Image (cartoon, rainbow, N blue to C red; front, side, top):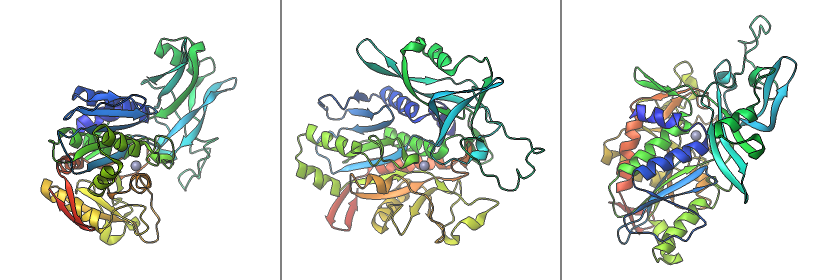
Length: 427
Ligand code: ZN
């Protein structure tokens, strides 16, 4: 399972590629692509997927006849990276560097002295307008060199990294073929056809399994994106409509036209419902018996720094799915959603552990509470325990990928009915 995860990560250097690759895997499994601009005629029993901005994706299977509600899982396909600015080349008589800015909040030190590549989306001029193409240079294209210890004796005493100075990637010596020309070559187009780009520096290193751990780039959140996708694909049809979401822009707050704060999920659920001849009231009734699992990796206890964890809510790689709690609802889990998800884990015979931040550490946020502002329903925040979140190379538990697949398979096969507010049957 982890080798398949590493292949998924290698094929997903950016959110655009994660969506493209996920779409290809769905099509291989018989799912049909839909466009938001088309009329949707949905066939019972058929699976479909739709993308927005080529960087977010929602897949679903149409129930054979009536259905109880939507059983949904969401993960994010973007990761912290350096976005290459439009006028990229910073040339002097000796070197060419690239002008970049931070996308999300990364651990800067981990990006240094490491062979890096470039991938993203290119907008081309066509005869009648514009067209998008994805590009992945794959080969080593840039590197961010450290300053030698001899010239910075304080380098091991806590460094601060200025993104406009310290983190600019070196592209080559002066005279190197321009990045634009290289991108044009890779796409087989002329430079004049390139109107603009969304390009990112990424880590192309392959994933490895060692002892009981795995290390790879972008485990946050591709480990969850992959695990939830496998659960979605493997689940047999139950009484609910299964939905899989892969959102872009979680690392920058989700408030984009395709992020978890957008109308994308709500729009898709409305359209499924209307295509099946349901009224708006039917949809609202269905949402009361629906459930969202927001999947995003969690902070495992650091071997050298266990003091960062709340003692009673310490979670470990390899020890099962993490259910995340936060009193201020940065994580959406509450007693109801956590209880229902625990039943699912029990049913799948998958271990789970509970995480809460230390009360004096605010911690991060994720998708669940943001998606709830557009589609409000019972939601649990879960993840898999990992070290070094937002490093260029992260580490997690080898057993947990399979745990997530098993739990999400059981989740997608289940359905919920409501007898009264707070009283649920899980079938
Ligand atoms: Zn994440």
